[in-house]
Amino acid sequence: MDPRFDQVRALLPTLGVDAIALIPGPNLDRLLGHSFHLMERPLVVVIDSQQARAIVPKIELSILQDTGFTGECMVWRDEDGYQAAFDQLFADSGIQSLGVEGMRMRVFESMAIQSANPSIHVSNQSLAIDALRQAKSDEEITALRKAIQISEAALEDVLATVKVGDTEKDIESRLVQALFAHGAEDLSFAPIVAAGGNSANPHASARADYAIQAGDPLLIDFGARYGHMNADITRTFFVAHVSDKHQRFYNTVLAANRAGCTLDPKNVSCHDLNEAATQVLRDSEFSEHILHKTGHSLGRDVHETPHIMAGEHSPITEGMVFTVEPGLYIQDEIGVRIEDDIWVHQGELVSLTTFGRELRVVEA
Image (cartoon, rainbow, N blue to C red):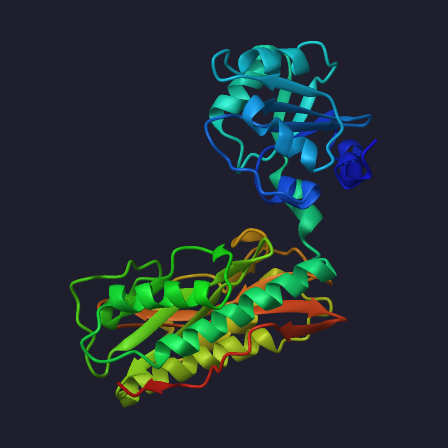
């Protein structure tokens, strides 16, 4: 048996399932050391107590074998379709209960499984499967540090170019170029570059028709991907000058960020950490402008579980990485978010991000 799948096998009795099915994504990537594309051709690896088998399109077979996968492969070709491969694996396998990544598996894959064995019980076990990668390895932390270092260097380069009259699209374009110039293997996600009132939309899109003005807030949420790990950083700046109100607004978020980043993590839950940061915002003059939770776990996915939010009582545990990103937003006026990537190491919270957090005015 391939020992890479031992962690998955250990879940079977706990979850009460005969097997677990993985499809391309961070869990399968971590186990096989290769990022397969999630596309119209289904690739499914099924792990039971004795073996791992795969439904694999012919076009991907050699790549799967190159990962060292030695299990039985049900190979299918485009001209024949994939259902026969599902039938071969599930019809006579003895698998009557199957745990799947319910947040990732598509409907057509689930339907193919049910068609192969109508009596099989399929259950969503995303939380348990994802939890296997909650504690990051030394190699993952090294890669994440590199992703963050690339991101921070790119941001510094771009800030030196910002000027009144730039559009958000101008800055976004320069940021993407800088990320790859500094060594990013990919983007963690499409960057958010938002100025003026657009910064009050937490998931804003960069505009090509708005010229940045003096006094505007400039929110940049972005990250490089390196070694399968994703940086996720947000900083908010001001262009040319900042008003007294906006300075107070910014410093309120900064205080909330500090409260979350400096909490003693011993015997603390995700809920507790969220409360530590959010209470600072609630106690401020801007309490009516809170829109979102404090953060989320981070790693091979940009958003992993557990989330740093109210009602999430999962403990903060050794090896976790998560974001602390409190924010405040006044519609059509200003948004401020300050986001750091935090690692739980030797019982302490360690900020992997080092980019300055103090209020910064970009001389434009």
